[in-house]
Length: 603
Ligand code: ADP
Ligand code: ZN
Image (tube, rainbow, N blue to C red; front, top):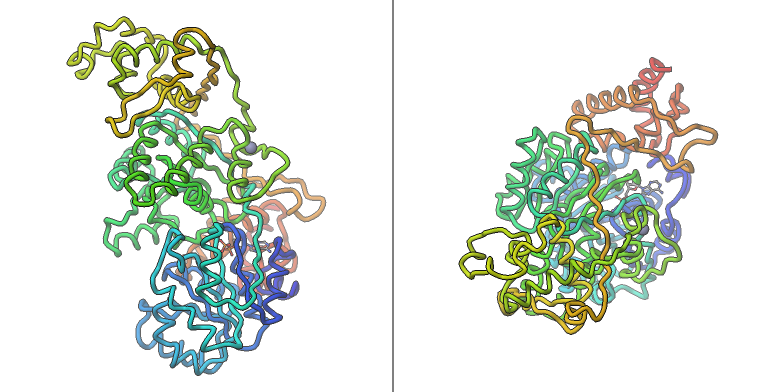
């Protein structure tokens, strides 16, 4: 097993659970695998496919995903193909022949196609294993329900001797049970790996309004020059305005949402995969078909509706294991809107509960990763050191007066205002609504002029979290003071708030490039973790040239991680090149000579 892993994939070690899963499948037993995005699910069935006689059939919901997987396998010298509606007839005919003659190790197929072929092609093949990728698509409880998936229960009836492995990154219990039941898995062993992705940093910014968000995003991207990232937005309009904002600053950005034609969406996806654009501004529709391993950052422009979707989306960063950053903007306006969606959704209880959990994450004053992992049922014993709370533990101050000013304005306006007008009153803004209702005559008008508007939005979120007021969602989102709010207003208790810190912006054009450090344990022994930047750039251009020649995305030729390992350990023989983690026999023979020549020039 280890030798096959090294020969074909170039890796020395299995990740946790991979080895157990593979052994289990080689004993021809069923399995359900829950692993986070980027956890390394594919090897769990690709390795048995190589070790077994016959062909492993992989059911996958998206053509783009199949294409990516097949290209990755072929780039490693493994015979693989995808049967789908994108192929032309000759292509499909030769694939079918390869299948029946047993020349393919892996066949990727969509669920529709699988059902269509079940009594034809599949009968004529020697099938070693069925792998059901993105298996949560079978369940109505999952977030990507696909009716075609529900008919795959038939597989075990027609092919009782062929084991099935179902894989997903969605961990919740109902979905899990649904998958087992519907696929008729036979006493499956369930493998649940840790959902921790320690290479993803976690940051939340609270209370930002649109302008501040734009600025924060530009600063963030300046710290990631040339690095691919995704900005998830709640609405189509938002994706468009954010993309325009970026384009104006000379950043190559594009949009992706369900309102575009399939051709437009494919174009964005293709441009992103091939590094022709740096940023995609997307609604949640984007990402499932993306296996791009060098997405270096994810921004959530709006609060997501649940921890599941949030985790799945940030999981698209850093699949190669290198450090990657995530940033979530949390605002009261989003919370109000999402509460409305959840309330109107027909599954009010579940959806409000889910919203509350992501809210807890956004409002956390303890390690954020611990909150995420506990959501997935994992107990942790220490803080992560890679989230904003760990890095800058919140400091508190006596905020009684600030709280009193806000609460007093709420009371004096007879609890008939939302947060926008409240901030106007506190700041003394003569806005249209303020003068129309005569709020400029209130005693508290302008009482909070010393606090910037953006900080007021932050403090209001804190006050909501502390329970000093509530939002009447059924009364135009007006704010209503609570009993504990009254206690503070009348000075009977004091209120502690968290100090707001605003980091200094990076001056434009001076974006420091963050060093991508390879974790020391992954470096060959005795090497200092020092990278030759010029060499890295040279290797990157070489990779780009080779990728263009082959019409492949660069990360399929060699991953970013491999490039970093090369420019750190600088192998000068083809043998040493082949020892780099991530380079198998096939790539060693194919690319070794050119890369080694380039490295020699720099030694
Ligand atoms: P998933 O399907 O779970 O999202 P993938 O199967 O795409 O994850 O794997 C994510 C990345 O991890 C890929 O780049 C893959 O090559 C790499 N990987 C998988 N297994 C190992 C391993 N044992 N050692 C090193 N890298 C691995
Ligand atoms: Zn932490």
